[in-house]
Length: 166
Image (cartoon, rainbow, N blue to C red; front, side, top):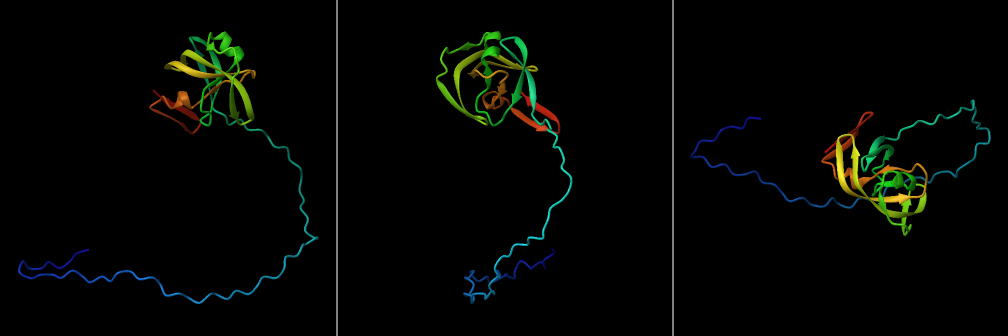
């Protein structure tokens, strides 16, 4: 938008703007009451039964623990801590408490876990040292949690690819 150019000697007054004021109160709108609800017993739902197919949508990676493995881990951004099963922890030489003295809420309920620590956790070329873990008694419960993911400069899912940047 172009504005007319004023000469240097002519002063231009700014436009007068009034302060906003609240809108005047309006009369309540009259709405007719709705008729009572009625059931239609003639309505029927038909069709053929179908079998639903389970679609696997979980992201998983192969992880080396203390230079051993690789072990299959589910990537879970909803998990605060990386969790491994006791069998994997023993096979990988993970330091762990002999007692299951911590309670953890999972998607499947509350479980009792032991605390542990991996000297090294490696996904692809990305290694992290001295990683705290939770050790569960459940078989095949290896979860890569946020304590590993948040150590990365960037991570995310792009299409069908999990992108991890050290």
